[in-house]
Amino acid sequence: MRVSRRNVLGSPLAAAPLLQAQANTRPNLVFIISDDHSYPDLGALGAPVQTPNLDRLVKEGTVFENCFVTSAQCSPNRSSILTGCSPHTTATSRLHTPMPEHEVTVIDHLRDAGYFTGAFRKVHQGANFDKRWSYYSASHQTPFSEFFDKLPKGKPFYLHIGLTDPHRPYRRGNYPVKHDPAKVSVPKWLPDSPEIRQDIADYYDAISRMDADAGQVLTLLKERNLLDNTLVIFTGDNGMPFPGAKGTCYEPGIRVPMVAWWPGRTKPGTRKELIAHVDLPSTWLDAAGIPQPKKMQGRSFLPLLTGTGAYTPREAVFSERNWHDNYDPIRAVRTARYKLIFNAQPNLPYRPIADLRDSPTWASYLALARRAQLSPEHMRLQQPIRPVIELYDLETDPHEFYNLAGDPKHAGIGERLKKQLSDWMHDTSDYLPPCFPRRGEPAGRHWPMSL
Image 1 (spheres, rainbow, N blue to C red):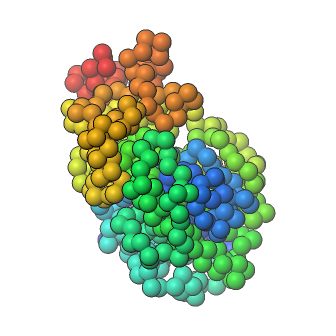
Image 2 (cartoon, rainbow, N blue to C red; image 1 turned 30 degrees about the vertical axis):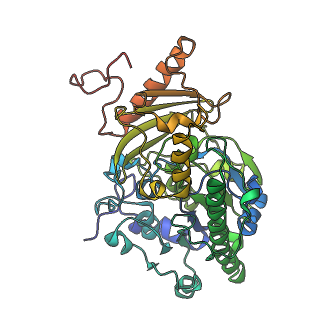
Image 3 (cartoon, rainbow, N blue to C red; image 1 turned 180 degrees about the vertical axis):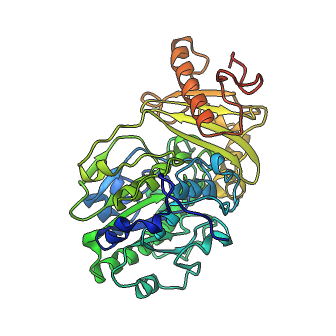
C-alpha cells in the first residue's frame, strides 16, 4: 500500500513544479553507515586502526566529534535516521520492529522530489520498507556499480550503503588487515587483559574491512565523475559491541564517528557542536532544497558543512534504550559538559545484550570480577542494582565513573537536566512517564518528584 507523502504545506511533493525543475541541479547524497562503531575508532581520529579510505574523508571533510545516536540499538536508531524522529515517536523503539507503513521517511520525500533512491545491504527496517527504494540489494555479492548502471541519466540520487562491519561475530582470518593486540588502544572504561586486547584487535580488523568497502563506493564516485556534486556522509549506527558500550547510554554506546565530505563545499576541520542522528534527514532535505516536514524533530546542520547560513547550536542531545533481547528502558540527556541518565528498571543489574554476553571481553570481565581483579570503577557493571538517576560531569569524568546524582553541589544541574529530559519526553510522545508533569496532565504520568 502506498502511503500519502505530503510536504509541510499539505500539497504532494511530486506535484511541485519548482522542485521538479531543480532536480538536475540538486546534489547527490551518499550515506555510508557502519555497524556497531564508537568514536573515535578511525585512524585519522587517533585510533590505531587502519582506515585509509575514510581517513581521506576525515582529512578533507568536516568532522563532527560530538555526534550522538538517538538509540544505542541498531534498528531503532536507523529508523530515526530515516524519519527524523525519536524511535518511541514512531513505535520503532524495539529491536527489529519494521518501519510502520504510514510513516513518511526522508527517502519518500526525496523520491517524490525527483531523486533516484537506492540501498545496499543492511537497512534493517523490514521487508516492506525495502520496497520503497528505487533500487535495493541485500546481497554482499552485488557490486556497488550496479546502482550506478541503473541510475537514470540526469537524475539526482540518494544512495544508502549499510555496511555490516564491525558487528559481531568476529571471524578471525576473514579480514584483509590484521591488527596486533599489543598495539590496540584499550579504552579506560574497559579492563586490560590479553583476551580483551585480542577482541579489540578483531574489532579493528572488521573496521578495516568496512573501510575497504567504503573505499569501493568512493572510487566509483570518482570514476563516474560524480564527486563535484555529491555530499558524502559517513557515520556509525551505535557504539562498539563491547560491555558498557552498545546497548547503553554511556558515551561509548551513543557517541559515534561522523564526517561529511562535499568537495568544494564542505569546510575541512573539526566541529564541536552537538549533533544527533535525528538531524540527518533535515540536513539532506535542506541540501536538496526540500522543506522539512513539521513532524521531524531534528535540525539541519548544513550551515556547519558549508560555512554559510545561520545555525542555532543544540543545547542538548537525547538518547534512549528499550527492548533488545532484554527490556532495559533508559533515557539520557547530554549537554556539552553534563549527562543525566534515567534507568527505569534500576532493580535489575546491567545485562549485556546477546552478542556481547557471548564475547571474549565479557568472559574476561567476569573472570576478573571473580578474582577480585577489577578496579572499583570497572565494578560499575557488576553491581546487583543500578541507581535510578546517574549524573556525570564529562569534563572532569569523561569515562562516567563517578555518579554525582546525590551530590548537593550538583543538585541544581541535576534538576535542570531532569527538566530538559522531561520536556523532551513530553514533546516526543514517550511511552515512559516523564520526570515532571505538565499542567492539565492526569496524576501518575511522571516520576516521583524526589528522584
